Length: 368
Image (cartoon, rainbow, N blue to C red):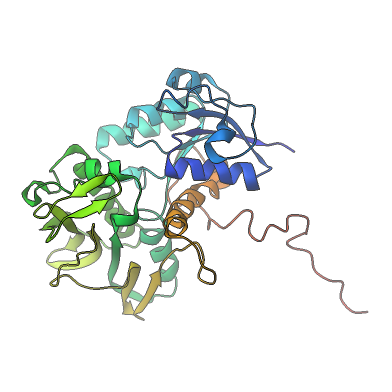
């Protein structure tokens, strides 16, 4: 068997899920390297990161060492992303799958777009960005449902989530600025908030470009709401009066008409402002048009058995990682350049039910 060689660049929540899935379910893939960011992980066998036997591959903190490796694809999931790094990976002859950005490279800054395209041409490689949201729910799912549309008037995706159970408090408090004064929260309030907002702006453009919306602008706005009471969130104390709610809206308009909207209703401490809309927790996608349709998505460890809350939270990381792990073959086979969610064929589970010994297209012999 010719196994595709894969490097995992970043072994946090999503990177670790990708690593574990490849070890457990993908005999056709081989982990050949890992880029890590803590001294404690350097020199450690990658199997130890996910509670698996030694794989004979130790992690490194040296990007140059990773770039020099022979591999077919890099799963790129660092906490802080870099267009320069991705271009270096692509130019070195390795394809890239990422959940961190690159969802619609054609709408990157012109200079960055040109760098990405040039790197793909130099390395004969492709780059694909996907995940949950941004990703499948704000890209793949709307496009799939649009196949039943005669006409689309508006697409709205609402995400409602309370971050209190999310153990990565560095992202919740340091990056997303929960616990900071509400007046400091804006689409340009920090480098991370600006970057995060830009991903959703890019996703609105993605849908607009894929579905012929012909929008003129995409705007970003946020309302920050102060906590009424103190909340202990793992190792952080969120104090009353600091930011406990953020309502973001990214809207694509043609003239005065709102055609595409992504709304995020994010809280910490479970305080839902009474004036906010109250969709179901999870993601609600509404397409107004002919016909109009609506669907709701929510991921859990299981809908039929009891599971601890940590497992339920963990399910979102699994879904995010699998969207790109299952896309590896398609990305490696794509022509050089950006390979978006609109470009690739439908990404389905490679492992599925796990009955890999059967012929999926076998048919019983017809009766004589």
